[in-house]
Image 1: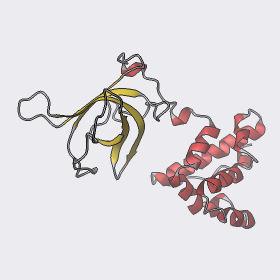
Image 2 (image 1 turned 135 degrees about the vertical axis):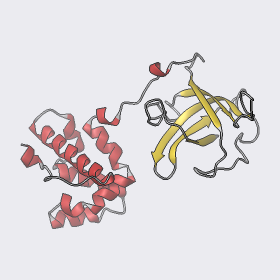
Image 3 (image 1 turned 45 degrees about the horizontal axis):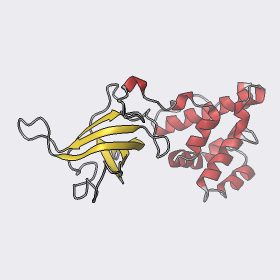
Image 4 (image 1 turned 90 degrees about the vertical axis):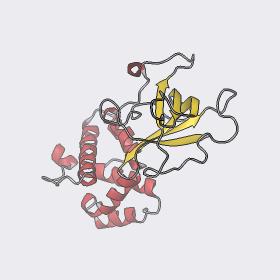
Length: 231
């Protein structure tokens, strides 16, 4: 039993408060959460909606829905009983029921965990180039970027035509385009330290820069750096 909550207030650093927390059914961070209706007048707290353990499943942030977090509610003997605790409430990023949400991380021994001690995800920028390419290759936005930029990324018409024929399989298409742009038989080449690996890493960083420029509407400045130019 899950619930998606739209967060109105960012974390202390101004970013999504769950962005670095481990997520997923197997590895997600466990929290003790308290969700209530807003208090009336001078009351300290409002009527309880759900109080108990929950597991962080995923988080998201975009212009349409804002900051959201999905939580797996505890369905054990001390958790949810009967119907969904949020059943009947108005939903939606703009029309949803206003609620007060508090969350405290807890360990497997039920002890409270300080925010500074949370087991965190490795930031995307610190992942290996291979891991980055695997993640972005599954991202529909990156796949669309590759499709729209194919003529610039792959000048060879015959190669481009072969890649275009893979468009009905977005992940395979993205992987093939990445290998073509990097001029490698497999992305694992970037795990190495030799000349070929460094050229591939440089090409990957340029590809990411082009993607982020388009994603955020930044002006394109200069010329794309190819592996030959990097060498």
